[in-house]
Image (tube, rainbow, N blue to C red; front, side, top):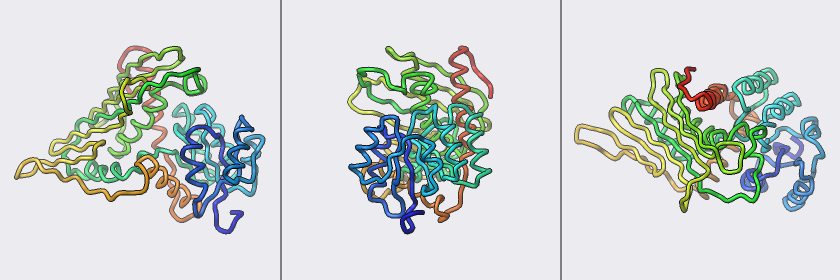
Length: 337
């Protein structure tokens, strides 16, 4: 740590998520600071660094990985780069926070985790929905048996259609690894499996809809059977014609039900159906920003030793499910895990 007790962070990639989340949140953060940035578009990186007072604009990724003055790296680059960049950063002795997905395949996720375990560095994937106040309040109902046996989970992320002037890296198979399923589906599936305490996958059926003038799907629907668990129904799209995006999850149990959003919990008691939804105190900003603040605090705490490191081995199973879904859709059949 090069400035008092501040965690010195190098940021790779200065695209949308970095500009909306990482850079503004850490610009005035106590306990951590962005000390260097790197992007293929050096002019953009230099402009952001100048505006935010970031002292170093690296010319190549290696300058971030090898910089002894940096304690951690945040990776906000296209998905196909995540695996190699995570490994290089960990090998360089850096703690790593990477945007989702960790890697494009379960084998790639395993390789990254093996390096994190060997180097003893913190590794976190930016699954910020786990840190929302409503998801944190709902999870104990699902895990504690208060809703009875959960037998069905439906979750989705439906984004409004945005007309593109030209495709980006997200719309190319080589750089993104897939379309809406890899972009939105990874996050929706992760939230559902995390809420259920990571049950094992039994079999998967999936259907994809090819997007207009892009290489990948703009919509996907999955039906997953979990071992000794519920049926999981996932739907995602980039192409909904509506006024607002929709992000939701519903849990159906033998003695109750819970949902997001809106956040509700109902239980079947002797007196009938009762609303037992906990009251969540208001926070600063919207749920998206709040969740990222909590995620970043968790990462900083693990990187500084304030809380123990827990490596995200569940990401291997997550990417295995995504891989099964693409196989099922491509072959037009149910696929067993």
